[in-house]
Image (cartoon, rainbow, N blue to C red; front, side, top):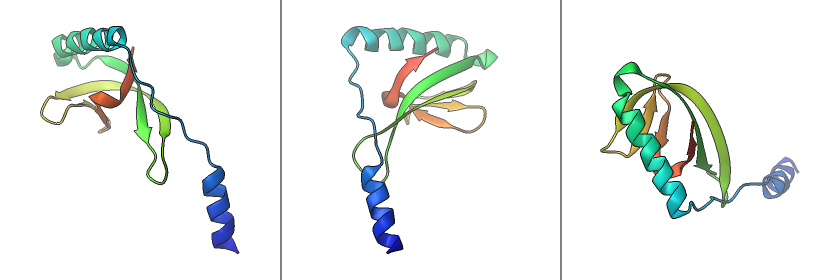
Length: 96
């Protein structure tokens, strides 16, 4: 019965749907990303809210993380924080 209970719990677990940004919101993110690129040498402190897809079902969760920006990886389209976290730029909802 343990497997059944786990399956019921997993089905009941809620996930968020990805928010589609407007063109104005995308433009604002682009401006903030450019500002971060200009300040990258100082490893600025950033707070990012991003979508993390769920590995088991449709949807996911929005995560907010704060850290020092170490690198902008243009090849993979990701921000790399000093703690090693890699945030895909397409998944970012907000930059503070």
